[in-house]
Length: 133
Image 1 (cartoon, rainbow, N blue to C red):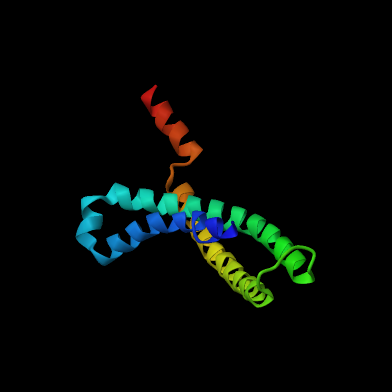
Image 2 (image 1 turned 90 degrees about the vertical axis):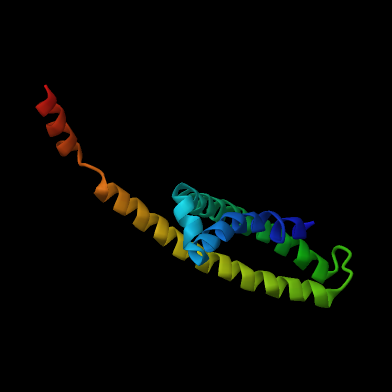
């Protein structure tokens, strides 16, 4: 049942990523829908953080727990070799999720910082309101 998450639900974050890549590959598509490109970036970031940085580790802990029980012989195991392969694969994929997650979180922080510095300061807004009085 873990395959439903690792090869199914977690892959949902690739849908907005596909649109982002299409827009990069075909600039007229991005020009025709600039809001769609920005929305896809936001949806990708939110889905990646949710699915791959929050849920992935939680599901991984349970997967490892169940797999180690199987390798110890506490529960039925169809193939110790396959289970060991899946554990090794999961370790590599989990490291990749975390590596990409660091990159994505840094980009989110940079975008938030840029947006905050581009926004008018409270003092500026107060001065503008005083001018209107």
